[in-house]
Image 1: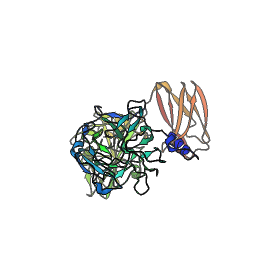
Image 2 (image 1 turned 180 degrees about the vertical axis):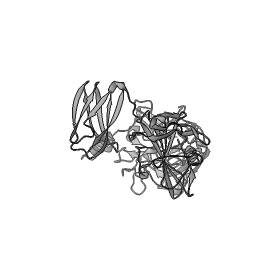
Image 3 (image 1 turned 135 degrees about the vertical axis):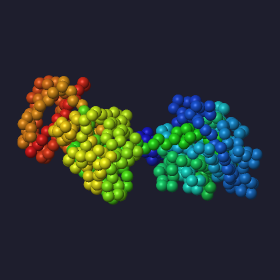
Image 4 (image 1 turned 30 degrees about the vertical axis):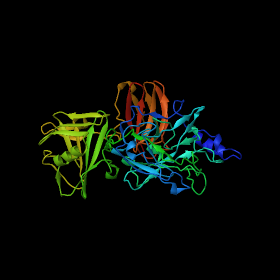
Length: 490
């Protein structure tokens, strides 16, 4: 983009001719070319249909007849055939090409157009090329043009056998010679609500005419008249379309599924407005939280329902169906809860469980425990609570859980032992760390407040007078370990 900007500025200088510009990819077989040979393994398919609408052999003399006789549209179907296997469009004619599977937008070029140009025998930098605009459509009705650019001189009309430097043109269908395709990247077509770049069903090639007389000429995307070999008053005149090769189509590059939104990382209380993953429909809302104590991670799903009440088991079944990363086993009681998204692989199992609804221990089996609008349900194992009734295995929630992202779970390691005092802090707190490490302080919303390095056994004063009252999380980490603790500021 920077190079193109410089070129455009140069073109605005007095006395600077467009013919002096050659900023684009050069001819085939030259360093930096974008030409793609027909044998390239990048092509996964070829056009399966073509409808040609040839223009006149000479736009200034329509009575001479149309081009294309003897050059049928079916020549375009399948792989390139070279010099004589083309359909000829004439002045301003066009061909519309279709495919067995729609073209889709993926990184890099998505398809390529082949013409039958040839090099000047005395100067292989110059080529006989009959240019064409390229347009795409996802419905066969609304077509959108690639922004083509030409810096070929417009002082004099190119003659019928004149040649062009390929480095002076961009996004025209016939930049390269026979058996070499010109690639097109759908990212270069401006976005439009009527164009689905994931479902391109039609590609249209339109001859540029090439006559620079204002009465007949066509213009590039920057307003330059397009000058190409003209006149060529015979049946094979105009853009000679050989083939359209598909690089990305839905059959070979299906649209990847949209990954589900991660569950919200939470502390012991959560605002339903902050939940990222909602399941179900209805006016009633409940929150389902699963807590892992090692590492300090809590995950929350929102649940909507229409009925007055729903069993905890049914809610968990619906969440499991909607989010394949979450799973559980059990009938009247839960025996296993898991979460695995490829980054976190968490597992709750064991004979001691706690299930808390609205801050109180659930008294029923989970298949007979019902939730209502506004309820909060938490699941955890014995590491999350304190046993207060050995006979009935009743637990209470022992510790709050930091709002750690599910992709940044914190693990504790004794090698980075830290201490904070006073805590709660008023105007300051003293931090002591036994090893060399980095210290990061974040607020309850996860925003970084401060970060700095400490040496081993260093005592550091942290000024908190500028902090708002609340909970902060101090994390100390190095190459081998990481530890977090809470800092309370008055």
